[in-house]
Length: 113
Length: 115
Image 1 (cartoon, chains in turn blue, orange):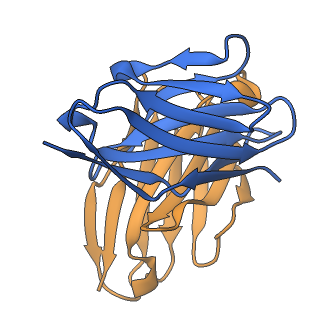
Image 2 (image 1 turned 180 degrees about the vertical axis):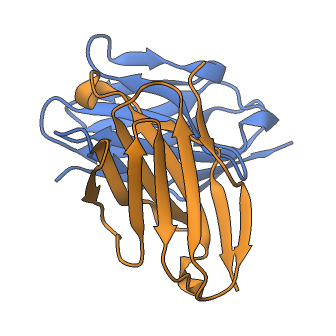
Image 3 (image 1 turned 60 degrees about the vertical axis):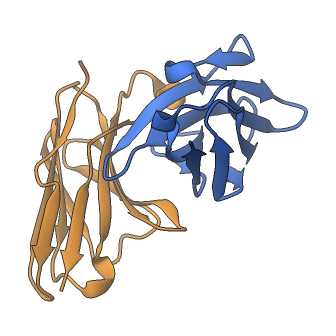
């Protein structure tokens, strides 16, 4: 079965600094990969997804992620953190059937002014 | 705009009460999901439905049941609420045509406290 590992349950960055949230997956080929963001007491919102094509995927709010098959990774980055980026981030991989969608345990991002 | 609506954002119930959590989507999606979210455990799938009246157990179905009488509505039922069911409950939907490439669309969540 597929699985997702998010390294670091808590990440702190200074405002304006690079954001890097790590995600590794185990999946049969091809993997379909997703990043979601969750603000306090809200549902999950899709940031970006990789299905096929270009391995560098751009999403909303200035985030992007790169699919690296050789490293089985899909790390999320943003060049310059903003206070509004403070949230919980979830990496996910889709399974082989419609009901299979595997989430990591999440990374809580704190942005320090 | 795509919309998944959960009827109650915050609920407080007593142990032993029957609890209904309602979810409606307006996107004509075939697939609907109920997850619970707890700190440090991420999202865990309770039940999944791929069509009207069709359901499959997820990873943690014990203590829960579901109902899908209409395509747009998926209800989660706690027959006899217990304190260990205090949690955030998230409903999601996914289009059938997109297959495994499609993302999940989430509601705002229902935070349930059982006293």
